[in-house]
Image (tube, rainbow, N blue to C red; front, side, top):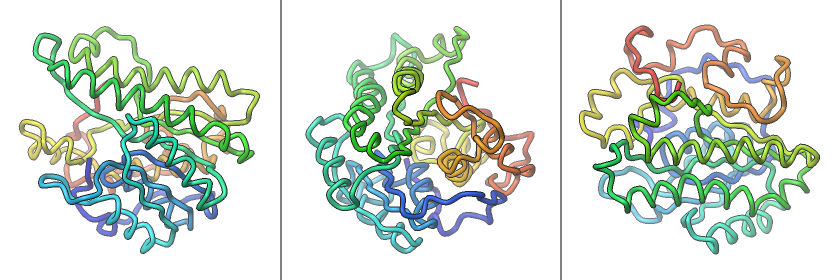
Amino acid sequence: MTLSNDASDSPASPYQASGSLRGRTVLISGGSRGIGLAIAVRAAQDGANIVLMAKTGEPHPKLAGTVYTAAEELVAAGGQALPLVGDVRNDDDVARAVSAAVDRFGGIDVVINNASAIDLSRTDAVDMKRYDLMQDINVRGTFLLSKLALPTLRASGAGQILTLSPPLNLDPHWAGKHLAYTMAKYGMSLTTLGLAEELKADGIRVNSLWPCTLIDTAAIRNMPHGDQMVQAARGPQIMADAAHAVLTGANLAAGGAASGNFYTDEEVLAAAGVSDFRPYSLGAPEDRLVADIFL
């Protein structure tokens, strides 16, 4: 996915941070564009160390940006960046990313499972290669990156895993609309649910984050009628601000639980003091925004 505009073109944010990621090391999958890049830029503005693992090392004909151009944006924003070309489906690539983060920055404090594939086809229409791709990237990739980072997250003393996946809404409506994709995204959310419970004694916070509305990304723009759809979307900055609020503990200040949460961007930012979400919109009135799926 990609930002529709350069991260530096984002409108002024209504979010006023109460904490900082300065000096923290963040490993993010698929962070070369889109929501992932926006989250990484927001962390870099604090002075964080960002390890980007993404497949795009060379310019893509349809998608703007590479892992290297993303790293340049992060440095320009005030952070340090380690760009790594790698595939979250490949065990060796993920292991190398974790090792490189430790070698370069001394450890990992935050893992962000951002890499994801989408296909909203119904069961009789979905290609099984696309089914396998979604299972491999979304479910296995999230599990693998989280798993291999656990030793260094434990050593952090304040380790966190944040996965971009929806609340586990068992209303049959969502499974019935696009079963293959629903299974893949809920697999990511089950990883949050399970790890939050499994890691209680380790002090590692594990949460998920999901947007309330459609977000303007290349993945959406490349769908049929996508250019029209994103006119009723918000920009990726809202997810960047919400992720920052979760990672800096704004939810804890509001009396929230430390781990095992399935947040929405609006919920997190409202708890952080945001009352006007209009600056995040691409121009559509709030009552004309397209609600995201799974909510």
